[in-house]
Amino acid sequence: MNTIIESINRAVEEAKSRCAAAKSQADIESVRIDYLGRNGLFPELSRQMGTIPAEERRETGAAFNTGRTAIQQAMDEAVARFTGSASNDDIIDITLPGRRQCVGRKHPISRLAEECVAIFRRMGFIAVDGPEIESIYHNFDALNTPMDHPSRDPQDTFYFPDGRILRSQTSPVQIRVMETHEPPVRIVAPGRVFRRDTPDATHGMNFHQIEGLYVDKNVSMADLKSVLQDFAREMFGQDVRIRLRPHFFPFTEPSVEYDFSCVVCGGKGCNVCKHSGWIEIAGAGMVDPQVFRNVGYDPEVWSGYAFGLGIERLAMLRFHIPDLRFLYENDVRFLEQF
Ligand code: PHE
Image (cartoon, rainbow, N blue to C red; front, top):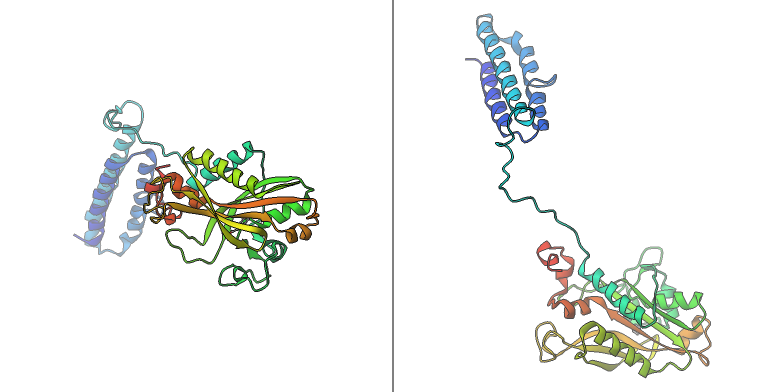
């Protein structure tokens, strides 16, 4: 037996089992292309026929013809399974469970951001948007950030070669709104922010904030506290407490950092709140008069508060997520729970 006959026998076996396993007419067509088609195996073998010794030609030619017929027959039988008279019973098993369609859904962060914005809308805030690639002026200068403030350091903030940056906070949206609108102003601005942090359970290199800004006459710290308290209750129920701690931000005076009591453990201490009973949400304060001057508002007439909200921090509380990194690994086993 020569190598051509061996190839023919092998091809027949292969083609038959492919036809038997075929799930569609297209599968059968691909068998035809591979073996009988213009660039398939059989035309190729027929070109090689001239290279074999004369005494083997007869036998080889016969094998060629039987092989080709066998493949054609296997294909015809397979096609019959998909068409006309042949019964469908042997290819469709109606007792098999159906294939489940996977429907996509919103990421928990998007969902939560929308929920926060809805709460603030009900309190009279308008949602606005700002660019993720910011000017240094909007992200730092106009927000009264001193030249030697650590947040300006390239170790903390991502700089582009042209001098623009990835915004490190949503606070520049305050500036953009005040530059283009006369007071009173009452906005929230959700969005993505970027910092050169080493990712761990409570920090990421990019995360999400909602900025809030309220400017009017006679706005006080009590107004700020009440809006944060109302927000916390809307989001987590009546039992959640808030706590303000003195802090410093260049664009607010006085400034605070604020925490919500841990709703996972009710303040008793658990791994979500790192056993402190509180989760830091972000910063807030009364708009610094210098910021008003920078945007052309008269600080003798106008007063206001601003706050930031860390959406990931809220997500930890809301969905009992002990580690922020789950939110970004796109593991469907995690995402499916929302
Ligand atoms: N931008 C501040 C931060 O990212 C939070 C903040 C917003 C503080 C508004 C005061 C007022 O930490």
